[in-house]
Length: 59
Image 1 (cartoon, rainbow, N blue to C red):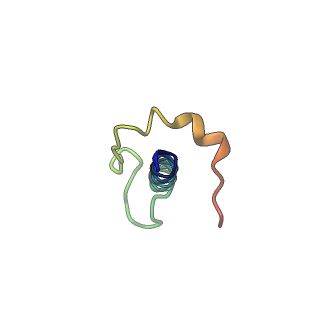
Image 2: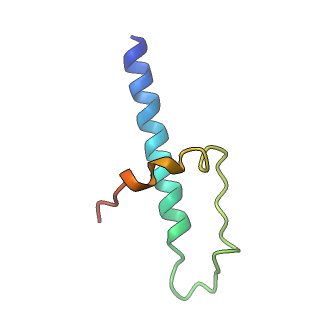
């Protein structure tokens, strides 16, 4: 039971990291937004940056 819970939590963390990473990278064209204005905050983002080389976008 504990292993299943750990796997589920790890999957949620990976998915959230990927989502925040995508949001930080994509600024809508023509929106007038700059990367400074679109700062996405998530307390664990910097902690999980070690995942960056291992996370690939599917698109």
